[in-house]
Image: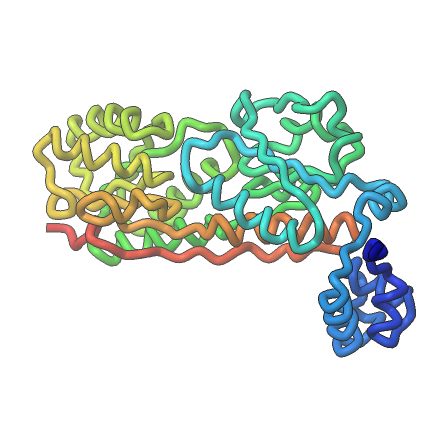
Amino acid sequence: MPRARTRPTSRDVAREAGVSQAAVSLVLGDKWRGRVSEATAERVREAARTLGYRPNLAARNLRLGRTRTVLLVVPALTTEFFAGVYTGAARVASRHGFGVVLYPSPEGIGPARDPFASAQAALDGVIASSMAAEALTAIRGDQLPLVMLDSDPAAAGTTVNLDIVDGVRQVAEHLLGLGHRHFLHLGADVPSWTFEVRARELQARLRRVPGTSLRTVRSPISIKGAEAAAETALASGNGVTAVVCDDDQLAAGVYKAARRLGLRVPADLSVTGMDDLALATAIDPELTTVRLDAELFGERGMQALLAVLNGEQPSDTDIPVHLEVRGSTTRVP
């Protein structure tokens, strides 16, 4: 009767690679940098692949006191942006043997309830997007490492942010360069740091140019809500020639409001968005908008959390954004 094939061990990998078991542990635990050479690390990885070695994660997790599970908290799943954040975070997590649980908070950006009997026992850390750090108290207590995305760096420990200030700058300079001086800002009616930054930066940019005017109107982040808010604002006149929107969905609502009022985009009204969702190229004319790389955002967030878990200092460089100029903006008639 044939003998059952035994599962390869780290000792077998060490023998195959011609290194110590300690070196195998460092490489397969992704802690080899600065301790063994790149050539040695590749030799260990190749030996593990050849032998079909898989580390005993359950035993390692018990030894390290880790669950290798991360919670990603988002305000909602109403756009593909947060799905992109999850995709990027999960991609990096899987390379390091972690899993990511996605939790759309039922309270939006408000205090998030603990989705587990005890999150501190079930998780190694939390990543939260577009929320305030204090909204996560029920989940993380004062124990779990926390990385905040799109949040005020002065109010949270570790943050990863998109360069929203530069995005607003690009929008303002683009529209001003086209001769626009009278603006409507259709802002999201969500009291979060990122939307406050957008409003503040737009106001500051336009204030520097003589002869400009700016009116801000708030709207729910929905096409229907934006249509109603924009129609009321535009119907009052005031010579507005450009509408700056906090979100692509808001911009789509402006398109509908403009059509109802007999205004043409962009001949009578230039419109810009933020996010570069699939919606931006589905509407006609295609939308000029700031591209926010959601997947890269999620990747950087997960990398920051892994750094914190390993006692390292995450990068604090904001992620660049880019204005995609399309058919919804043109020179003032």
